[in-house]
Length: 210
Image 1 (cartoon, rainbow, N blue to C red):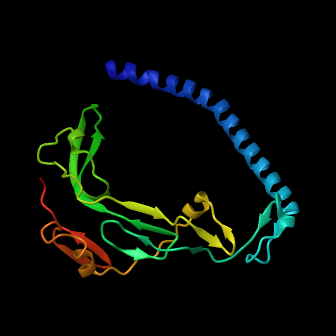
Image 2: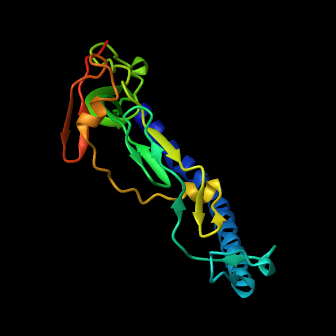
Image 3: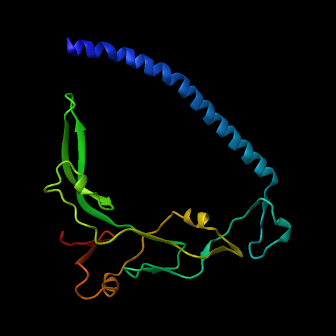
């Protein structure tokens, strides 16, 4: 009887929820269409008044205050250097991506609403806080020895025009750099760097959990 009573309520709740969702979905669709039309109109208007800068080697005063368009090669003035590993490049952006092999928790709910927890080791960017696990014992994650890092060149130019911070950070087509393990080891004191190895262009660092 309890199961029958619970099931008899589900269609009613589902119907009410569905009736509430219909006007909400219509309003959301109308808002998305409005934004699309507004954006399209803005782009069409911009295409009619935009001026193209043919020569990026000089500033044309006649374009001051106008919407302009230009293409060219962006170049950074100076090099970026990883403060820990010493990797250096004349680049617009330089990133160090660090992942740690660690425990991850997965929660699953059964039909009786009693959750079950399973654990597996995965590569993950940043440390997963194992103290928040349901069963942390035996699944403790150590503190990461190194963190990911990102830097943007302070000055980047296309001809005489300097890019702002937003445009520089849009640079996302990264290329993997060649890394010399011996050069990295020289950045550390003799006993401060755990053993390093390289495989498939990735540097692996092994260290013991505290």
